[in-house]
Length: 595
Ligand SMILES: Cc1cc2nc3c(=O)[nH]c(=O)nc-3n(C[C@H](O)[C@H](O)[C@H](O)COP(=O)(O)OP(=O)(O)OC[C@H]3O[C@@H](n4cnc5c(N)ncnc54)[C@H](O)[C@@H]3O)c2cc1C
Image 1: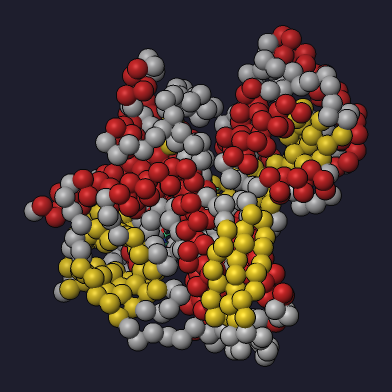
Image 2: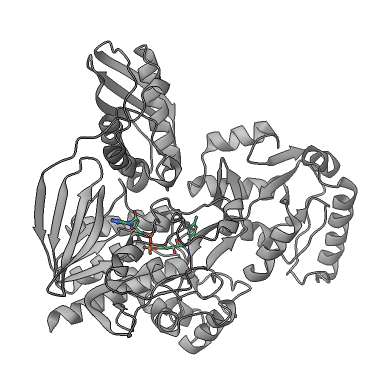
């Protein structure tokens, strides 16, 4: 059960379940502890004779908007629970795990066994605070924060509630690649695109299971959203439209200059802060309120202290993300795959919207993705890096039989089911390809240099497989891939490069694998994260009921909306939709409030 909750929700959980702290004696004093997160992390833990009194961060080198944020609040959660046996925080797993380790080390220095400190009940708070604003936004992911920027631009006050100790949700975990049809850059680079062309391509990928309303909004306004964020909000995107992926006929994606979701979120959050838009962290919305049927705001709770909030507002925007960590809707068959989504995606928005007769659609649909590596009991998305390796180097994807089985750069809806069918799969890389791949992943904070060093040292014996050896035969033998076939497959691929044509699977081929070792086999891992179902909206992003009537004042944006993507997840549409729907929801709410 703990695994399904964020560390910070756990404090509230223990409030309800009343888990008791083990009997332990403490020697009062201040104790130092260290660990390695994204860099060196040092803490001081102050103990009283009854337990952990406070934790202060002495040194940290964490990513400011994510790890840095949780370091401001996660220490309080540890003090509240009197334990480090809390879940790591999704999107900041490296930092949160490092903090737990540093505190554990300080406890050990004080002669306390951290394993004996089980989470303690947090006292319920009677305190209730009432806040009033024009619009309350639930969720500080890409959609929620973008909507807040638009509403601020249009002259409306907002309060954003965020249940985690940091902003960003799944948006921070993405590569930031965002669908952007009709941008200024497309026009400057002579890319011919149109909303209709984009819409048709999205419908084909989605196997016509889409809801035309959000898919059309995405097709029509995604370029305008990126141009507005870039030109008016000074959010910095790369000045190119990217290569056309197999799903699209033209390049129509824009990534943040940092190339990472973390960078995108940091940039957006900085603009939110610069405008003085309040973001209440660790504050979970629990209910949308109404006054005689008219939406009047939300109720919320501080997950660390139990303090209650009543937020009065004329409109509510639910931007709570998807439901990959909500068992109600996830097909049990998917449970054999790691879930690489945000642990905050527990379907809260769905439950709040259902109180207003919201209509759910495509709830059984979940995006299964295959470009990524396993880390512990989960996995990390490395899609951009994997595809770059296939595009720019002689990297090939093989099964245990040592054979390629699909176009590595082909449509996800073809490649990923094929990966499922063949079982374990590995990228065969040479030194240059491996270095480019891992350097980009470390820079994007997908994993740390220390983790990488460990996996290289484990040489295929650990959970994350990055086996290496001087020859192809040796590396194949380490992980049990058929070496003879693998050598044969590489020779065959070389032949394709010479001819300039992959007659097996039709991949664009131009570069061979180096003739010099070392070689690497990096295991790729199927996983799920992004959910494709959700609430039904109209063109104004209002949530509609079963009679298709809008619930006046109640809006949805981002992954909470169902039917945008259809049965499969087209590349870059998650972030694209979060930003586009955030902007459009802001405009629609402003229009509603102006009447
Ligand atoms: C590993 C990974 C990689 C991805 N890569 C890409 C990619 O490269 N390109 C792409 O287009 N898409 C990608 N996606 C999908 C994309 O990131 C998401 O669809 C999109 O960012 C969702 O944005 P959002 O704002 O709707 O939700 P989120 O970014 O998840 O934000 C929702 C926020 O709401 C908060 N919240 C939830 N419930 C409550 C509550 N009750 N009260 C207060 N706050 C609450 C959450 O804590 C969270 O911060 C990826 C997803 C994952 C998991």
